[in-house]
Length: 239
Figure 1: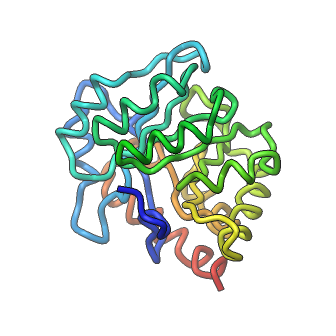
Figure 2: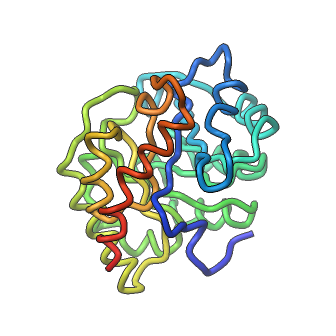
């Protein structure tokens, strides 16, 4: 259940492979490919739920997430790119997802959603699109465990990283470090060996990576390499 402590924060960069870039015909094998030894495995498994309404793409829903949860003990990080998360989000928490993230642009009552997710045993995440400012939602974020900063437009994998969103990550890091917020700063979109260092410098805790992991010959080694690439700037951002 929810604790007042920071949720699942590591002293090293957290890597969350996105199964959006995995081979869906071999999903259990693809999940197993990032489930290595402790300290080397994926920290979270990022699952994008898209409904073809909030975003134009359609991916998977609760039945597939339930199957994924049975197939792994990696904490499942559900990113709901859907309309009406007020109605649907809690089902993913009840199914056993570790972290359930909703979009502030779609939520009617984001504070109520956070309370429902926590009551159901999950961490509550709030995501903001690249064009959505952070400042109007700082009070709302006091009710959340995770801030997911989108560094691409949600809906499709393989897009180019948008570096200007890092100002939002820096602001969130500052508020966490000064005790005004208690949350994990997560980033999603275009994260790879070329972009992870600047995201780490901005104070990101958790890095969602899709093609950078699943297009590699060895996804587990790709997770390790990304973590190592982020580590120097990650440590520097917390001095």
